[in-house]
Image 1 (spheres, protein in one colour):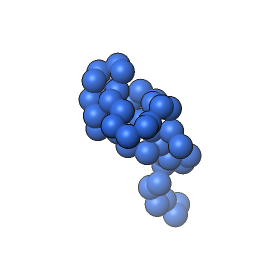
Image 2 (spheres, protein in one colour; image 1 turned 90 degrees about the vertical axis):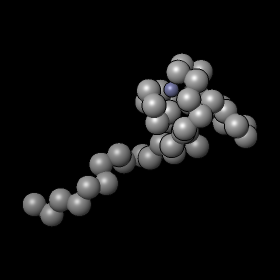
Image 3 (cartoon, rainbow, N blue to C red; image 1 turned 60 degrees about the horizontal axis):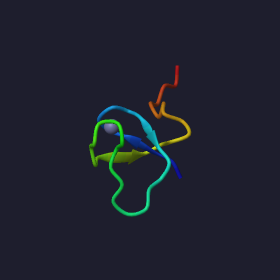
Length: 43
Ligand SMILES: [Zn+2]
């Protein structure tokens, strides 16, 4: 499962336990979702 840095948006594959972003150093990571557009649009 891939993770994405919530700060810079870089993808982080390696996630052992407490992996921080190697780009900006942020520890805030969010799970990368297959479909980012979860917005409900019934139009
Ligand atoms: Zn980052």
